[in-house]
Amino acid sequence: MFASTSAFNDGTLIWRIVHDAQQSQDHLAIMGTPPESLVRIRAEQFARVNKEREVDFIFDIPISMAKEIIGFRYDEEYGSVFDILRITKPRWKFW
Image (cartoon, rainbow, N blue to C red; front, side):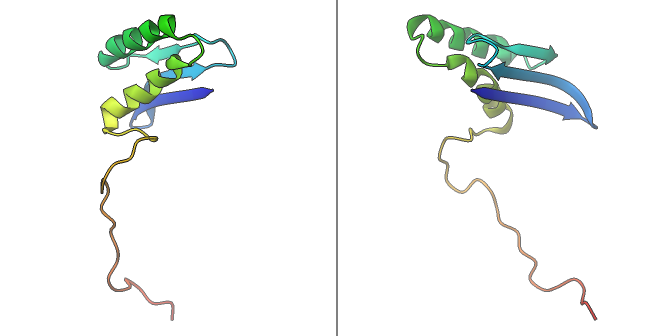
């Protein structure tokens, strides 16, 4: 399993969190300076590892960090989060 979350500012990497289970079950690479909430998220997920070793809770660290930043997870259902914008009339013609 692989999960990664990153933040950029003007094209420059600010931080990145990567979990790659092919390297090891507890693999977690942290680059740059991630938000302070990573300390809490990491502690919560590693505490869960001690209880149930068959589940890859480390995978959730980058995913939970992304949820804190953007407000939703890729695997959770939400109501209408996005507005759909449509052009009501064409801006240009092809002839």
